[in-house]
Picture 1 (cartoon, rainbow, N blue to C red):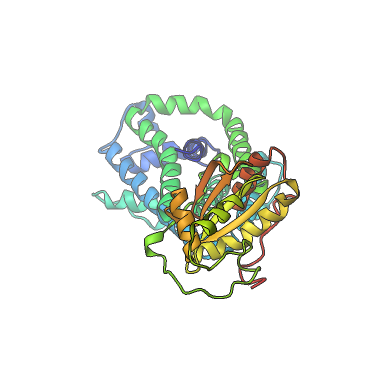
Picture 2 (picture 1 turned 30 degrees about the horizontal axis):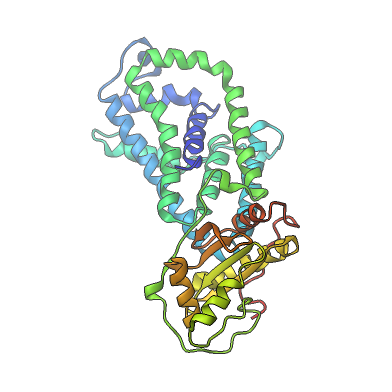
Length: 384
């Protein structure tokens, strides 16, 4: 499990403790219990308070997860510009953190809007608290909005609908778990919350600091510290073996041979990776992920080629590439092998990779920093 899940859970708890949520907890619980906040504090728990609160939490969580799926779909649409999306998302998260800490003023964000909340009418079953929670999730408040927006930006860069849904579910769990606990232990928990209100500013600063730190990680290209890289692979068995065709240097920097795979040609392909540290990329002519990775690899090569690092490609659509893939135990494309100066494999990455991950791996291989600040890759259409 990556650090992102505990961070999102903590963000949910801090949202619960924010000035926009914590003071309203007695009112929301009283509404769910069908009694008054004063009665709750005096010991009256109302009828079915916990089950109503559970339905409220479920309604809120369902909406959050759906929003996460929408964010993931938007992120997938912009996947060809993933580096830029990561940086812009990081900037948005960082600014949201500054807003919560009070360093950034945006009066239009200080307004509260919950257009559907007052239209929910109390009923006798569990449907109305479910809808009540959904309406709460669809509203905006100066404390919840920036955090939720940051979580959605984070989910949009996950590269996976499942992961995005889990991110939002984790955040919702952190937000609703304390509420469920209070509903179980009212009125004692309400009296404890009243004492906690004096620390609201501390909780708000903690939320802002957490968001600002995550935003900085995204902006500087270090988001791998809290989230796993996006990795998807293509089965070599499903990769079409195409006839040899002319390949320009712009589309294949390795100069792959299309001659029959003799032992001598395979040996030449392998010994070409010796003498200096090398990143050997296995690609295929019919692999769309390989095409998307082409500008990312080119940018990484530009930043690291002057530091004694060599980048080579082998096309598994060719006989030499297939033989080399079999020799190295490569099962999917794209696969990146990081070889030392003796040609020995020291690391391996499979599937689509962020540019910063490739650069960091190359820097470890070279033993020194590469040039430049994470240059944005050109579009796949350029140079073709």
